[in-house]
Length: 248
Image (cartoon, rainbow, N blue to C red; front, side):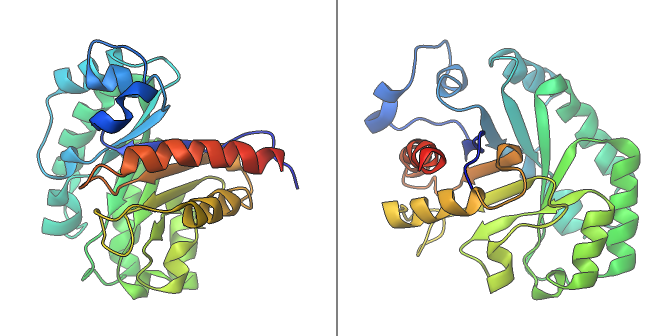
């Protein structure tokens, strides 16, 4: 079935390799130039350290009104606290990230591989999060226990999309889950995560898969294979393949 809208494609970070610089327009900063070709970006640095509210506000002012940011939830919440007793940490993070204004599109919660699914703990955390924000949330669990009907139902109940990741740790992890009214695809590079480039067959398969979901136009696709600069050329190529898929 033909679709009328395309997923949103971007990268983890807005660094532009010199080899692809000519594909972008002029701008006063790397983010400004990045936004001439992509409409979304994932901020990963927030996972490691807090950013000042003024920093988020400056980033928001550097992009068009239609541009959207995905901001990764700090590891102090997901890893150190393990989703428990996080009220103060959530307040601090959301107060700062909220300075992106309406350009804040997604909160990305990546869970540690050792975090086993605990329905009570997860429900308490997502309730606390939802009391504070209505922003779309994408969760990337990495322990197999999160890929069950009960875990999926809990994510859906709280309006949380489960990330479709590559490479997947288990087969189910390759497909969107949770709240499927929208989807978030996060491709890290394969076979070597963060380093390997994707070839056309893989990118074409991704383009086809995103057209099979309920609302392709509500899908985010983030290329995270940034270590050797492959995310940007892969994302640019994916944009072309998505257009070809739509008109096929």
